Length: 564
Image (cartoon, rainbow, N blue to C red; front, top):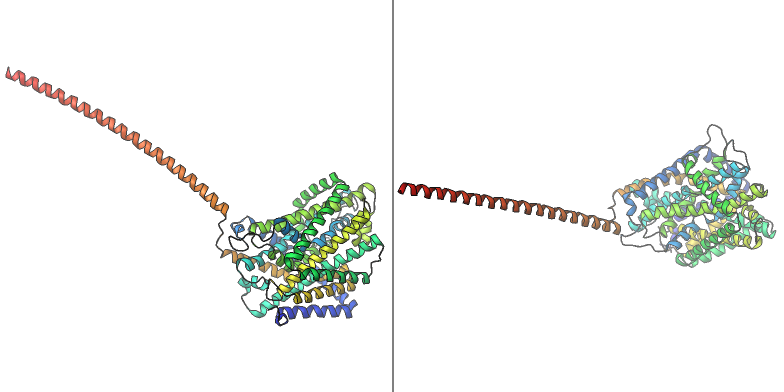
């Protein structure tokens, strides 16, 4: 299958489509950027409500599924156990998901909201604005994003490891759409294109941040040439990692990324305002919970404005565009875990880490502006890529830590792109778990090329447009995946867990003890009643004997009198 990958219609259709986009972007840069902008506004103006509703419905579905009886079903056989350790699993989830994005927006988002408040009536750059900024940042990086990944990954993992079928989106939709070859080809091609655009957005943002960091720290001017050079170096690095295989390259880099991210997090916490960070985290969690439904369904049809479109809807679209890749990868590394463990692990743990990251890095920047009068928010407003580096300027060991932050962004880019080449190669070779290196190389090159074209056509705005537009058709597919999984689970025999067996045995033992106790009490009662009856009978027998003796004596007496 891998040797003739070009004959796979999903590969040929999606690869040719992406290649045409690369050529158009390279040859008609201005027109390409203008069309992207028009498509962006058309999508946000007409379908923003659809993105918000779809994500909220998915969250409700997954939470209900996790607490239901179906939560005990394993992604694999009933006796299978997880392939990776818990720490490695979480590291791979985090690196493949939003490692690059979180480093990019961890300081930039709360400072952007602090500089210009998301809510009308809140004065910018005040304590109230800081609180709203942190709460909204938690919302954008909380369970909503990871619920999207979890939805796609759960269906793919269930089909791949439980049903022993390929991990393609079209296969997961078979309970609804049937097995029409042309329909399945179209669905898988949509998924591949959306994935490439989502990955290109993250690659582009990572490259922009690295380029901005080099300019901020080392005074190397951020130009498109420098960005191209960074992209080329990243391409070589992630293709080298891809050649080593999933169990080596991605697993090692995943652990390294998580370790580096934790080290950077601890550095900010130790040298930063500890109490302020902890209080910010606690308060923002409360605001996140209190405002979750309001933020999830917030639009601006009455007062107007573009804030929700520019932030929340973009985030959800970007996540949905990533979801075929991240979902497939999450499914691949989650073999052997239960549905409940999968949902809780995917939705809660990375989200909690993301919120702590934002509270620590973003909280340090907010504290600096609020208490020390620095101008980090204004710097972020002028250049969003400088956010983390502007914050590090206010901390000790600026040069060293800034360099390590650039290294972290670089390794996150490698891990995300490495994972993406594997998933795209798998999606375009019939769901193969071991796609050839040549297929990975093709997708690695196309991802790099489309990211470079988007950066050339309009920078961050073009990257955002690509994600949002490509995610629209896959949003509908995501909802269909939810219904498809529901149909599949309805036919699935419920897994009996060892804990359920132990609980049943315990209950059965208690029932037997009570039954035995009741039988014992019943037997004791019967025995007492029998003894009572025997005593009564014995008493009656004695009374009868006495009566008989008395009658006999009277008879003898009467007889003696007659003889006299």
